[in-house]
Image 1 (cartoon, rainbow, N blue to C red):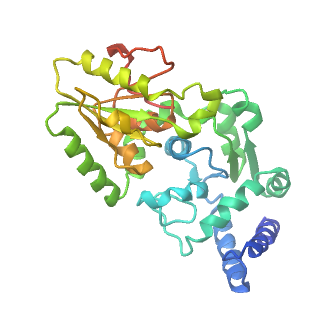
Image 2 (cartoon, helix red, strand yellow; image 1 turned 60 degrees about the horizontal axis):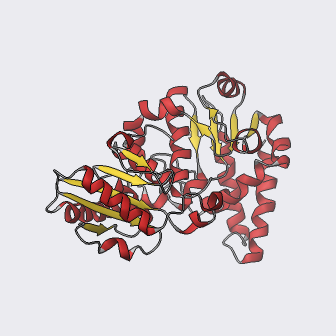
Image 3 (cartoon, helix red, strand yellow; image 1 turned 90 degrees about the horizontal axis):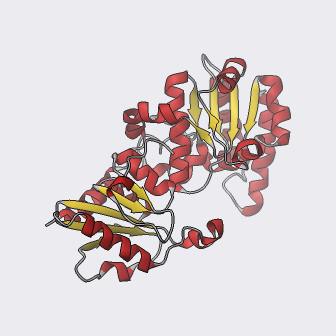
Length: 340
């Protein structure tokens, strides 16, 4: 396998030199070839290696994508590599020092992650299938079979277990991979791996302490804007007036409590920060700090999004997902989400 995969990798690496990337010297190519050789020696050793060849979506999606495979790996005994998580790995100490973002791993050349995040999607395409199979590998691409139909692919099903038994490595591609039961059973281990850096933790702690000052119930509000204007035809792109109504309904629902709101958004939401009779605080501002600040609230409100779902899952926080502009806040709507 080494020769054919190395050739594909080196051919792709040379393409980077056109854009002035770091892969334009013979020394770098030599390092790359040596690293690929060492990686291939580890693949299939004692247990199957599952490589997530392409990240799907943004931060919330990427977290659930990786966490689902990681939880399943703990129960099924395979190893999981995910260089596509490199865009966010610096926020997580157990993942940020390894080319393949392996928990606790340390690689000599973490800069290679950028290369693999581009190369592996190519390898999981048609040409890669031809190159992988004779050497014990398999490409598992569910974009047409499951993603397009919005159907989950169960990582605990016999079909996947059979692939693990028959193949040295799997290159997986798609969004709807799920390990719903394992994700909750292995939640402590998942939380440990995806625990944010000290800098993020300090930022979150400071913001939560400020927001909790003088209140005994902190409700996180996820105001998803930006890309939601176009996603599904703007179905969940709610006006700020709707969020104000939901915040007032939540405050009235807990009229016997001292309620405050922590508002996190990917756009400016200034009108929500100065409402009469409502105590509000703005989130820290960065995606990672906003996410884990929401995870530290007592309750959550927001449209369907893996961002707020992760906050609910990681923090064990009840979340009411707002499905439409005419929906109302009610106690039974708040649920701790155990998976995606």
